[in-house]
Image 1 (cartoon, helix red, strand yellow):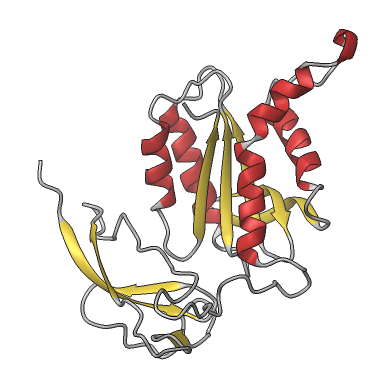
Image 2 (cartoon, helix red, strand yellow):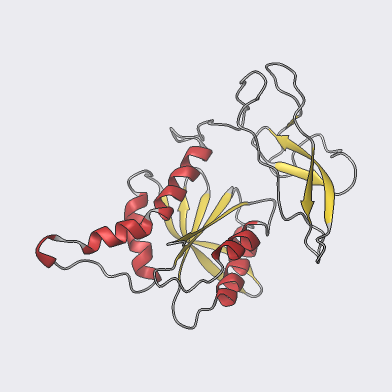
Length: 248
């Protein structure tokens, strides 16, 4: 079956937001997400940055399903672009570093849970039975790297309802939504829940990214790669990362 593809023009702003156009070059002078100027060439050697990409498109809305990687530095002279490794105001680490640490903690979560079961002399330990147990352990692990972690922050209402974000890592404005698979929670239902979460959380002022952490110890999700691809391509204005562990 043929997949419809399209060519897109794009620019990257000083904060690393990718803004694209379906037809013709991006005419805006400033980023419509943060208001920063666009970077179109390397400040070190004047090498132009790539400005087009090709991607399969969503058959319903024509949006791209694959986005180009945002380079961290110029491959011609090594100049580091302004969106790379810049400490977030109020923190000693950059946004990229903070996001990387969160992803690593989530991806290693199952290993931590298995280690907690191996207690000396079979002493009692925490059993991960539901999402609240996952949140408790994850919160403890996040405390290793981050000081300001807000829990159950209210998100704007969506489709007549409101919800609370599981974790907000400030000042990087990274949201973390926690899910745990269980009997009766199919991949479709899980995906539908996260689609609603994404639509709701993108309305929070200043949010930069959402990490959807799915703990699947019984390996109930059969097509984890497909679920990750579908969810991560939902929105271009917010950086969405989906981590499923264990992921076999």
